Amino acid sequence: MYLDRRQLILGASALAGTAAFASTGHAAVDIAALHAPPAEGEMALGPETAKVVVVEYASASCPHCANFYKETFPALKKDYIDTGKIRFIFREFPHNQPALAAFMLARCAPKEKYFPLIDMFFEQQDTWLAAPLEGLQKIAQLAGFTKESFDACLKNEEVAKGIIAVRDKAEKDFGVDSIPTFFINGELLKGETSIEEFRKRIDPLL
Image 1 (spheres, rainbow, N blue to C red):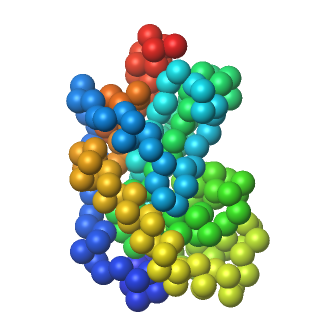
Image 2: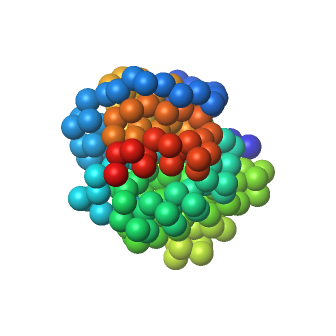
Image 3: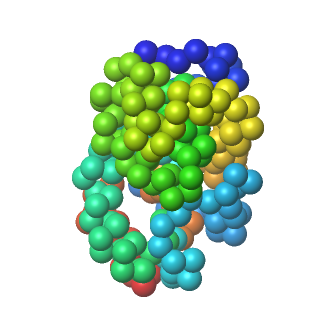
C-alpha cells in the first residue's frame, strides 16, 4: 500500500499515524497566527473579507475526512462559501505516505486545479488507496500530469517539506492532534461534524 519512501524524501517518523475522533472543544488559538498563510501559499475558498473563517486540517487518505467532504462539505459550500458568508481554508495534515504524495501532487498542479484534485482524492479514496502509486498517477493524468511531471513532483523535496511544515505548525502551535480538525474563528472543533453543528456555530457569528 505504501509508496517508496525514498521518493517522498521523508522518513517514517515524520508521518506518525493520527487517529480521528469526534469531539468538540472550546479552546481558542491565536487567530492571527492561525490565519497567517503558510510559506507555500494558502488554499482557500470564499472571500477574504468574510466575517467567519473556517480552517480545516485534513489528510487525503483519512476516511473521516473523506466522509466530511462527501456528507457535510457540499451543504457548507452551497450555503456558506458560495454565498460569501465564510472563508474556508484547507490545510494539509498528511498522516501517512500516500496522503503526503496526494498533497504533493495537488501542490504541484496549477492552483486552479488544487481543489478539484482534493475533491477527487476524497471521492475516489477507496480506489486509489488500494494501489496508491498507480491510483494517484491515474488521477494526476486527468489534471494534466505526464509520467515525467508526476515522478518529478513526488521527488520534489521542497514541496514535501512545505507540506510537512504546515502539519508541524498545526501540531506545535495549534494543538492539532487528530483529523479532521476545524477552527471556526479560532474556536476548536474536532472530528466528523454535521452541517447542523456548523450552522449552530457559524450563524451566531454572521
